[in-house]
Amino acid sequence: MDIIIGKTIKKDLSSLKQLAGKPTTTDSHNQNQGMGSLPNGLAAMGFDAEYENTLPPGLVTEQKIARVTGVRKNLFLVNDGHEEISAATLGKLRHQAPGTGIFPATGDWVVLDNGRIASVLPRKNALSRGASGRQGKKETAAVQNQVIAANLDWVFIVCGLDRDFNIRRIERYLTLVYNCGCAPVVVLGKSDLHDSPAPFVREVEAVCFGVPVHPVSAIEKTGTCALSAYLAPGKTVALLGSSGAGKSSLVNCLAGQEIQATREVSAHVGKGVHTTTTRDLICLPGGGLLIDNPGIREIAFWDVAEAADSAFPEIDTWANCCRFSDCTHTGEPGCRVREACLKGELEQERLDSYLKQMRELDYLAQRQHKSADRVEKERWKGVTQKIKQMKRHGKIPR
Ligand SMILES: Nc1nc2c(ncn2[C@@H]2O[C@H](COP(=O)(O)OP(=O)(O)OP(=O)(O)O)[C@@H](O)[C@H]2O)c(=O)[nH]1
Ligand SMILES: [Mg+2]
Ligand SMILES: [Zn+2]
Image (cartoon, rainbow, N blue to C red; front, side, top):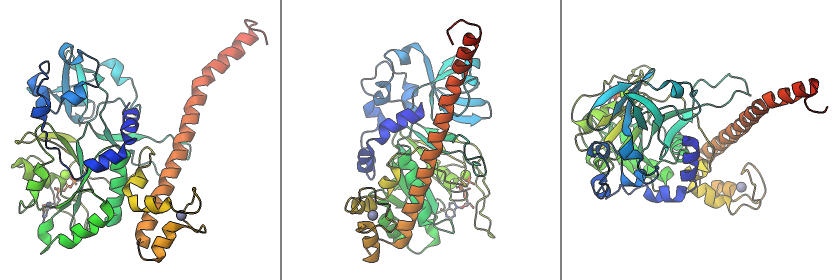
């Protein structure tokens, strides 16, 4: 379900880019005016008129709705703005296998039936990635997606200004976020480790094209005011980044209290130790909603729209001037992209990063195609057998 919705939103990537850099000025309280039918608690949890309009009329007043604030094995923490309870799913929902895209994830809106989750409401968007551990599996293995968080207004790509800093990784995160139809913001954490974070900000801005970049320090509590603008009441932000990037420290800083556990990065390898293991939605005192996530090991893409183009808009522009419309920019004559590289208008590393992402997205598309074929074959397998049987028993002519 999320995939379809994701695709609908993805079509309008340009509007997402316009959105980038402009935290909304209308907070949810304003948006909720006129929503006489809506229980107040839900608005505090991020339910707004725009989303309500996408649902069947009367659903909100007739059903008990709550938001998933955490996932614990087979139990889900759900909050309707008044109380948080843990709820299991109803049997029939449990039998819908994970991977079908409808299993509840943090940030989802769900319908409750006697304290159990009866269904997941359609997602506005969902931050998903290819499930980790795919490597080494058979070529034909169906690609799985893992929903990190649903119904987001922004995704903070958190990158520490220590050994975590990696411009190519930020490019990959941007593709992942665009891929899911979400709006990215880059947060450069641990700015206190430098006299001035400005050179890092410039370096990131040079590859981000209009995506806001904010240097912050959770320890010295500097730069975080800029982030509050995205966290207006009822707005949902998910944190994405590697382990040890400083996501949970940022949550604690914005919340003004130690809600999330944090742990030191290993001095030896410069990597975090995966302190956060659950995906939790935290209600901030200012009314914003923040989803902390475990660090990401492998940024595997999921779904294949024109997301790589969105993260590399300047390459996309040059590509329009290549002699061949299907130019792969790997050696064709009249390639404007390679020319940009030779003229020093485009860094070789950035082009390499773009080509690598394109190859991956191509590969993913082929695998998705293969698994779709397989699903189709399986769907008809039973029917083919039935026809054979009927022919054998003379029920239909051979
Ligand atoms: N100097 C400095 N250190 C920070 C800052 N923010 C976080 N750290 C340190 O970075 C380490 C990792 O921080 P966490 O917040 O646990 O990182 P995380 O991204 O939540 O890591 P996982 O939960 O494993 O994904 C801790 O030792 C923090 O004290 C900061 O602003 N400045
Ligand atoms: Mg953490
Ligand atoms: Zn070209």
